[in-house]
Length: 204
Length: 204
Image 1: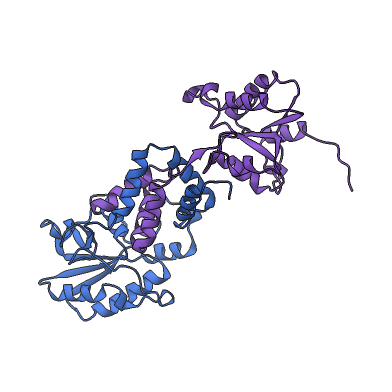
Image 2: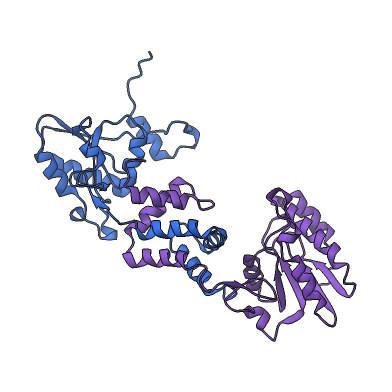
């Protein structure tokens, strides 16, 4: 690759470090950036440099936030006694896109994964228990970790911890066939979960 | 997307402008960058900002270079009378990976494409003709523009222009089945080109 000038090689090298981006894609992106106007390239450079500016975690739900309480936790129309537990901030984005959920969230910051050295203490589980202690009245915790091995394990661990709060209803987000999906192409585990989770059907 | 802090939204927006990167991928990249160490993120930011530092075009072949003459043109072992004409600097990188070519290059800086407002004057065609005028002895120009509509058109245009130099041999890079490719899956045009370009087969 010595054919290319150093500054381009350096950028290709840095871009290749990103997940899902190999040398070919990195080269394509580098040349795209080279052809862009100086201002547009600077905007991207600045956005990366300033990523962590004014960024903090919400004191209540531990989602990324610009203030002590995130917009969702600060919203008085949100049900503070309904808490959806997710792995990452992007899960909140996905759930919010559904526009139907009116409760709050609790972002764990990952999943329990002994292989990666992540135990319950590395997550915000203690903070969740603390938060539940502060609630009054009936509450519900929806376990919305991913349907992966680690996600299921974390949900199981959480469910056990939450037994300390007998007044809190513990639910797990539904698993089954995605809308628009095809039974023919679904994997066995999804089929199994979809059958297990079947519900009474009462047409209009 | 108002769930996410402004700095992340800004970065996702900037990353989505890159070719082949949609909002989902941009979000994934932004969160990957967020989890990286400050130094690593700064390295990428700096590489983008400093992309054009000390960057110029080679006076002879118009490839990107750090000096007046690029490494290839400055190399005395390279045949200056053998010129491979390509569209973009990345094509040079690809051809150099073959390690068999011992001539020089000429980077057009694109292809003739009236739809995009690119005519022969926007490319370095005049510079190529000027370069040929300066050569002495037998020379060969290999037309290695892409086998696309615009690439073929540009090759045709170049071939007509090069007729002014009757002592210059004009060749076109071979088209056919890629090594490791499968005739069964090849498109009709490749099959047609592969048949047209068939050569005498003389085993061992």
